Amino acid sequence: MEKRNKPAGRASKITYWVATLWLSLGMVSTGIVQLMKMEADVDLMTRLGYPIYLLTMLGVWKMLGVVAVLVPKFALVKEWAYAGFFFAMSGAIVSHLAIGHGAEELFGPSLLLLLTVVSWYFRPADRKVVAVNQ
Image (tube, rainbow, N blue to C red; front, side, top):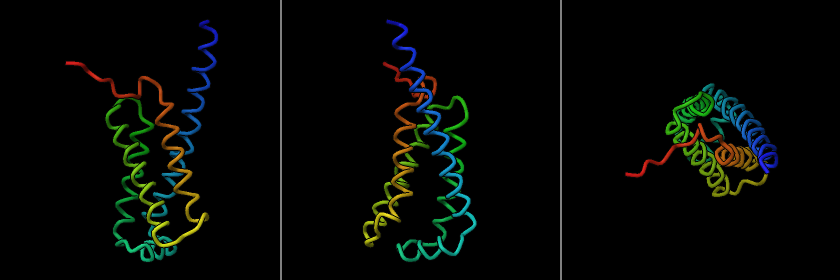
């Protein structure tokens, strides 16, 4: 029976790292673009009705979130990073839907939201917050 659990454990670990690396790549690349305040992103933020300084905030938060998710230990900080990624990407989806954007604009944030959930769900035990009963 123990041999049956090992492949599932290995598959979970592979799923975690694939999702986490793609999530990190997506967050870093979009964070860099936001920090650079590229014209297309400035135009998009204006159309969405957000202030331009939000690009800087999102870019910095994404970079810090990636560091938090990738470094060992600091499970509580990882939880906050995953929550931040979840809120940022779900907020992006809602913002695009609110102004009538279609599937093309929804693909990126939807993919990053999915990767956030998959990475969080499959994270190893040493990357989870341990509940302490009092």
